[in-house]
Image 1 (tube, rainbow, N blue to C red):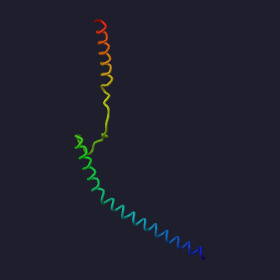
Image 2: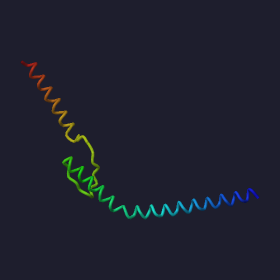
Image 3: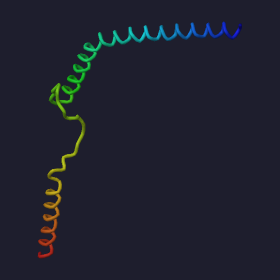
Image 4: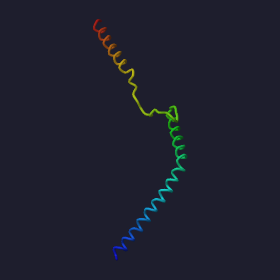
Length: 96
């Protein structure tokens, strides 16, 4: 008899817990749906302000990831020119 009462009590407590979690989840989900546009607007405004402070151009629908980069498109040309320049300077110094 003790096992039967304990089982029924455990089922009642479990059902209450699941029901309470479902109701709380429903309320939290509704609150998230209501708050989403406001939060999105604040985040975009904060991002625009941060970009403005850094002196950049803000576009809401850009596909570029902001960050630091090193432009290497002209690096190989610049290095070869500097090496050629150094070589010519060495030849001129030796001829004098």
